[in-house]
Image 1 (cartoon, rainbow, N blue to C red):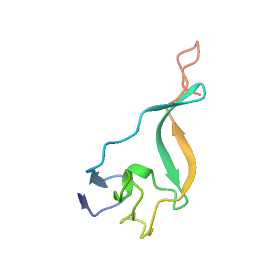
Image 2 (image 1 turned 180 degrees about the vertical axis):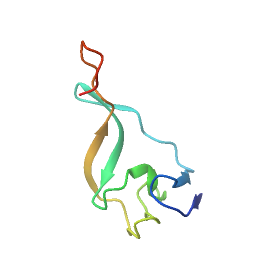
Image 3 (image 1 turned 120 degrees about the vertical axis):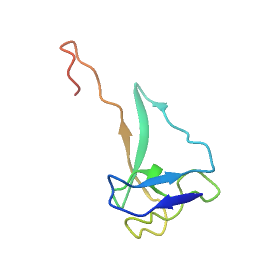
Length: 81
């Protein structure tokens, strides 16, 4: 696994463990999860599971679930909600 230091927008992490996303949660599709540090799970290093380790940009020690990040809903007007 490797990561590139930088701001949140340019941060990239190469994972060794396969991503569980996208996945269905109820009637919506989750594309990632948000940590208590506000970074996506995809920005956290792998431990035994995908993205459950430290988050180098935020100096977060381990992933702690806050919420899902869902793909936008498409309305009949074509705008996300």
